[in-house]
Length: 344
Image 1 (cartoon, rainbow, N blue to C red):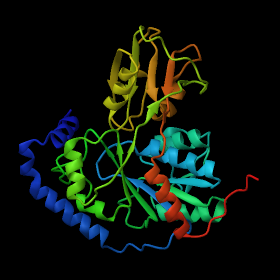
Image 2 (cartoon, rainbow, N blue to C red):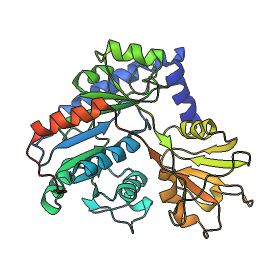
Image 3 (cartoon, rainbow, N blue to C red):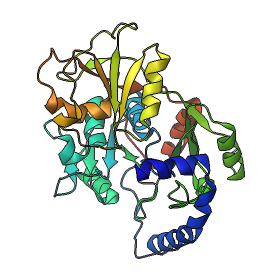
Image 4 (tube, helix red, strand yellow):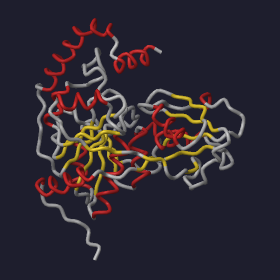
């Protein structure tokens, strides 16, 4: 597929990408005109943490957003999440995601976040409007934006960039000559870079060149296995038995490698990010266990016939690095007064 070939070229540093430099310059010019256009950046009605990325495609932001929500909940805050709602079919915004929504109506990641954390999740292409809606209509006191780093009307109190440790920033060029949505110099205005996995040598060099000498590391883990049809926990399949896996995420291979590191010999089937599943994507008639990500599960639930069907999903969990916890504590005190819930 042409898109996959282009992505491989970005991360392998193919020489022919030099031919796309003029288009990269045009992209940067158009981006600058858009960023300097008539965009009003208003004060945030609530403290705002933006979790974004420079790369096109997935880098593992959403598990970090879920971990941030759970961290705030444990600390006594009342967090909420805002999202663009990529590919959402909803027509009226802001829209508060609820458990009866479908992934096609809200977008797969917002629905997954709401089901995983129970926190309010609001989708709106105008993210600042979503913040205002939350301030007026809920009792939340801190907001996390899933993506939105490049949103011109949004001003983060804490800006976090997530990058895949193994792929890094690719060849370091912007679209279409590389995978970046904005130049690496943007990292100078970021509060914290979070590396998903172990940073390879090229990524370490890119971070130093951009003035980021320190970064935090996250290591998402697959722990609980849940049944797609009813979200009930089930035992993991025996290591010696055949297992099939699907993934429609930014980097499906990362999910397959996690399963392989647990000892499974998997038959992996990768789909494009945010792929809308249909019955034709599942031609198998056997009882081989089918494993998927939580993001896949919110789209596949409607396709499951009954609990006897061996479809399972694996939510990713992670521990927040100490650097991030310290940053949250320091910056949120500066961002404005917030009232914690009393647990006494």
